[in-house]
Image 1: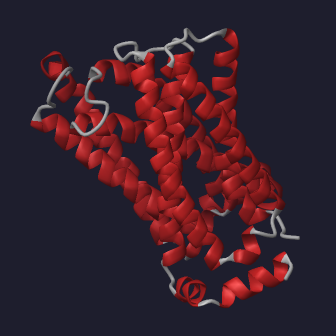
Image 2 (image 1 turned 30 degrees about the vertical axis):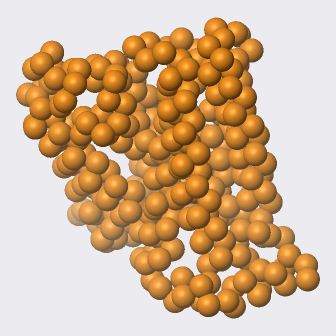
Length: 158
Length: 158
């Protein structure tokens, strides 16, 4: 079974048919997905800004990093569930789309970066120029992920 | 008369360019800026409601996040205007779009009241439990921004 056949099979399953039959399910799931992404972006931004020494100094970095990353993992769970529902509803638009895979690669990279930066912060190390640079790269990746998410709709599937 | 203004707008060279070529790029950028606006505002709102970032002073969170909010809002408003131009005569009859604009107006008024009236006594509630008018402002803002996302996403589905 290749990916196109898998997509065709998935789109014929009960859950997929149920979402497709509804007029409001897709925009509603997308709205939750976008909201979770917005909150993820901000959680990551608070951490990155703190790494760069910009504000939120009332909270020690190890504590802030712990809270931000816990929030990010919970939000990623919401994103995974809503994202999986959107793929189930419209497999032909996502799993055969290069922009979708670009988004997943950026997600893998930013997850690894976040884990690393959080471990640096938890050890109480003073952030170096390298850490600050990667904190900025993480924000670019989050931005890219959000952009790509919308761009999928306009990029033709293979 | 009104109709001819929107027709004129839609036929300006920029509007035609957005409509025919740039739309996917402008819309994806609009989603990115919107995520930054909503994520940062909801984070401040969580603190105003007394549910998140409780150990940080409100003034410190506001100082750090509101510049992000304003820069992102300028971007979202610019890209949003470009999207509007591309199909002005259609959007003025699009119910979710009109509701979204009313919500943004209400949010502006809520923010204005909070900053001009409520914020004067910030010294009393900067740390610790937020006062009732502070929580009310946070609640109104949270509910309306969630609605902005939902109606915004819905625009493309009618």
